[in-house]
Image 1 (cartoon, one colour):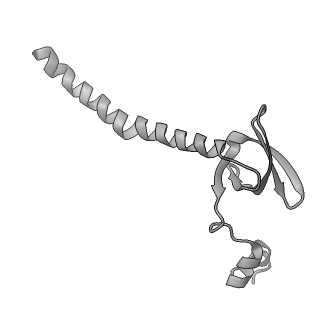
Image 2 (spheres, one colour; image 1 turned 90 degrees about the vertical axis):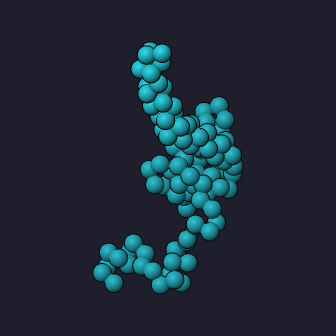
Image 3 (cartoon, one colour; image 1 turned 180 degrees about the vertical axis):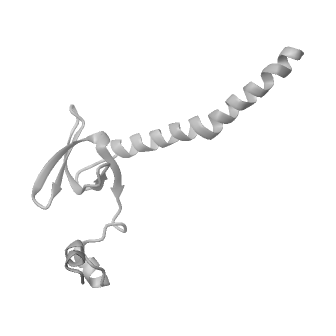
Length: 111
């Protein structure tokens, strides 16, 4: 009985660590893997480096993604994609001008 009382706190702590730390990380990793597997041509994406682009081609053997950034084609590992941008999140420079926000070029000029 004494042994059970001595081990019980450790078992409770391990259970809490699993519920609060390990399980959420596994869930996030699974969601990320599902997102990467669902990539298709035409998806707007953001890489982990912050580059925005549109998926032009996905090659399976190398797990690479080719994105088109205004005529420049770049190749990335599939795991470098941070997220898929939905149409509601994408704001083009034309929309930014309509909203009256400054583009980076305007900010440099001090306007």
